[in-house]
Length: 520
Image (tube, rainbow, N blue to C red; front, top):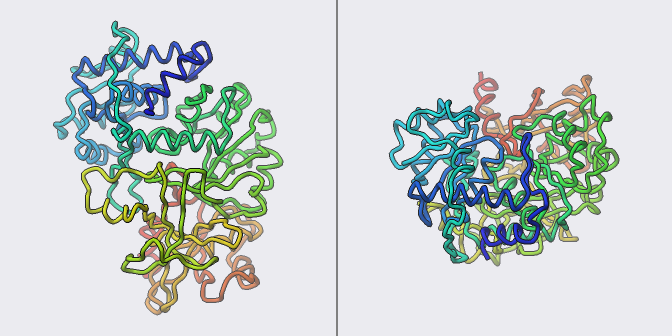
């Protein structure tokens, strides 16, 4: 199976059902499929052939998904770019991918004109400007192509299951972004996995606030809803009130939101004004949620909340189901239906074999196997060989597994703190901090120290204004789950934690911002 075939099947099964809602426009499956085919023909007229890369550098929008599915119809490879990238960062991705065409948002025109001077592989630029008169000279207009291209019977090659469907670039939180190669096996497997695990239905109406350049937004949420013939409502940007208004107005049934968004909506002073009773499922991931907040989410927002673990290289590998949300708070669940997971010994030289598993409740590196695991990294055989070994993906994430088979994220291999010769896993400390009354969010890192080499430092966002460092320290001292040497020696209060669009805290930013301060 391939993504285009699934899209065609949905259009044939549900031609008159609403497929897509964006801003003030609505498309049935018949209408949207015809629009996608016209745009695909337009790309073909520009010279795009199977396996050519087509990049899109746009905000979350109809343009994103229409471009993505037009690529699948043509057998081309979609290359989504983070629309927050600066011109120089976009240039790196475009050069690395060798994209032939770039579709871009109207707000990004200055960046694109700068990039155009330095990237020779891109032959054609397509602007998503509302008015064709605002398109730069020599560039094409998205809506003109999608609406006025005459031949909507574009020839569609039938790709093999191993044919690339997308190059999805990592967020670069641990270094240079890498192009993760997704083939049709991967993306069909991800979609089917989500349909089964979430119990998605044709009657579902999904709200998309997650970025569609991200696997969590596209492969693990948008495509699964398309697969079952559901309706997708796309918001151009996240705003707490706008999201709540849309849930009420469109009777949204399924929502993917990162914990910071869930908390912002739940704690918003106008939350009670909106009817969110249509929601039957929220899925989240990427960060922890405090117990008190989770109880409120279940009681006031949505009774059924899933907490997933995945990565660009292997989406939705672990999932905590709603019935376990409170009893196993802090867990990322158990392996999903298509996934095998192991916890193996973690050594600095990273040479543990897949059969070197650790005992229950011990911390080790998570390795994953399943049809959703990437094909490899684009133009990077060295990194591919490091990550893919003996049929397993070495995630670089530290986890433990309890006696009941629930997995717990303990941090990144690179995040481990060595203080006075002792290994300290930040997630262990964070889980204790999240139980502290008056605390909303926390992130633990190691900051340089002349005596200990590195000291445990907690960055804390208050939920209660009166919370102070002494109260947090007293709480940690009283905990039975935190050894004294793991207790935060520095507590820094911040208004918010820096995160990437998938909700993961950018600890590298915290370390870079505060390392010099604490040493001065």
